[in-house]
Length: 401
Image 1 (cartoon, rainbow, N blue to C red):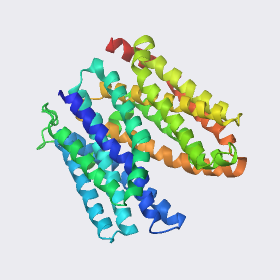
Image 2: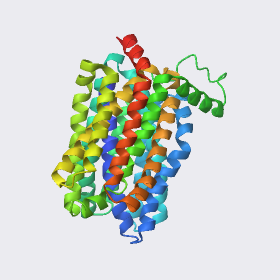
Image 3: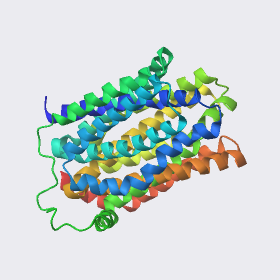
């Protein structure tokens, strides 16, 4: 098994655990409290530590052996869920324990995901990055959104400790896959640990480099705007599905499944489309599809049509993400990969937080359909940024060719 297959296996196993956790831990919390604020605090415990640690994680990824970071991150997640399994079995689990699990999980997950993105260009030839990112993303959508959530619910119905026990096994499998990597994934030799700048200076270096590179800067800004646009309607989508589309819980689940189908299809077409029309036009076309999907949802109320449009939207998001990651991997120096990726993640997470707040306000003030139109406007701004940077992308594609 070559190193790419091991990275794919590790990613698939850890994403399955993430999908199970997405359903199982809130269900476990619901057995302890029926207060919405305490349940919502799980998301806060997951998000805030990620925001606070993401830039520092970028430095860690650039300083240390990335192979070791990957397998230790997954071994530690396995140990975390082993502890939770023991608490559930002994009936000593508390909400505080779940908040701690969510907080640690969020930080370690960010470390693992950031390292995996940085490792891939060292394991795969540059010409194969589009295909590799597409396969990993497609697998992630399948196991994280199709298999993981229903499996988590089914296992929790069997016994509350079973989902955590499955996660222990899944993260051990991921850790062993990363442990078996045979390539060289250390920090490049010219980054001498004895002479490198301080931790804070390295964070600043990453931010400065990301901002100085026109292509990376454009991708990061588009990612931030797209994150706002995405979260504006998705922050209240469950209410929209019930009040506008007339869907119950089962219908809402099917609506989300339909959108996940779009993600799988997007992962399949991303690389072939890029080969035919290039990075710049693939990203441009994807953003047009994203804007058009939300603009259309703003004026229709048919559940089938909305399901199709949401699938189209998620398909665009997957294509955009694959293109953005592949370009960043090709442009960014290996020694800077972790820090530049962390800047992108910080802006993306911040955009999600802004979009969530904005979506709630817009839905309250103007109803459930207007925010979709506003979200489409954010993708229009993304298209403006792509147009302004078109010369840089053209030169990049010429250099790659």
